[in-house]
Length: 228
Image 1 (tube, rainbow, N blue to C red):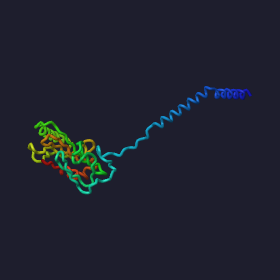
Image 2: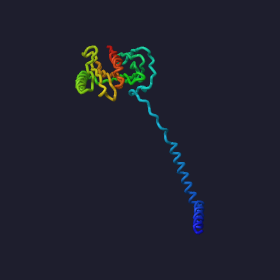
Image 3: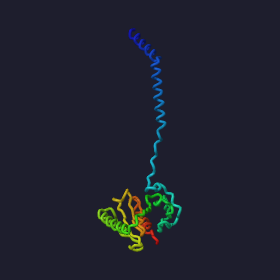
Image 4: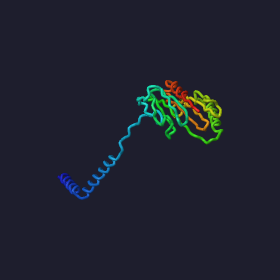
């Protein structure tokens, strides 16, 4: 009997406290906290989906199989710097003006569905008559040294129109799979014209695609022709 009376007394006190302003205030605080939490959750940005892997800066995704507009090899003439080059069928322009008329100086093509690409950049240097020859000779020597430690499969001088003052002078390198830059293998021709413009032509792919596409990449480099 005494236990029953004690239990009833506790329940009565609990009822009084629940009806008190303090309990009402606590409920209001809790409701406000719940509302704030829901508002913060609503403000959170939706989770980002993983972006498709890019073959190279400026290229389409490797899962992209949409081919270029041309079904046959296409030769472009750069009207600003007076050189031409031929892009294979099925490749696509990703950046820049292939004729060189736009202000942007880098041009990128890619082969959809692969990691293959081709890009062109050029820069002008001060009219110092010795700079181009000194740069080519020093860079070629450095590349030959790096070939001995496995960075390159091939290093050679590559000139056009003779090595004199009116010719294009440069060097070509082919990187190894193990030591290619940025996870790519490149066939790269660096050269200078008589006006002290320096050019870099790169045909490249990831190592897994290189052997299967090496001949095509080399043909792109070999197609480059400067005119006077």
